[in-house]
Length: 176
Image 1 (cartoon, rainbow, N blue to C red):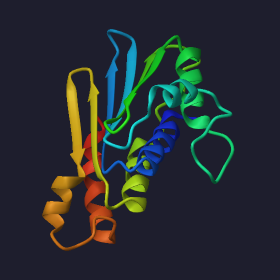
Image 2: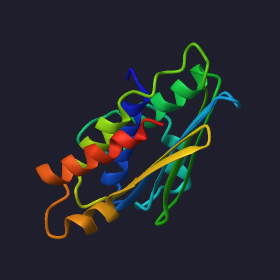
Image 3: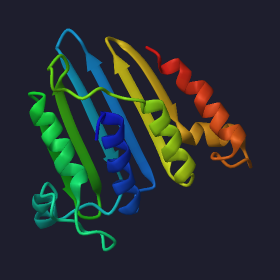
Image 4: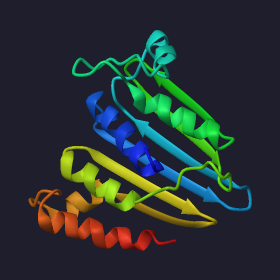
């Protein structure tokens, strides 16, 4: 995966597959601390200790449609390559929290990528999910909450052209 937004897309799709109906994506950029942090928090089925330990093995997957589970292992390797730290916290029945911290200036840190398009892709493919996206950069904060957008749209589906247009317009504010 060439950028972090693709990693985020993959991890969130895993959350959806784990029956999450609320997923938070939190990105924090702090140039003074030379830190880029990514958090993905879901309320899915979670993992027991044994599954959590196996989760970083690229040859382990709980999915039946393929034999490999590269998502977490690739993100973990990307953090290590950029002098960062990676962790998975999860408890059966209580969801999962992924933490990926990168040395922002490290030459091997992947670019963030088109996070706006990632959010739109996730909403289009998973309109039933409540998605909260928060992006902080050097003291500025942007947030998008699909629950609020769904309330504004009333009976119009969030993945309709007007719903996606509303999200796209709101995401333009993320140029912090």
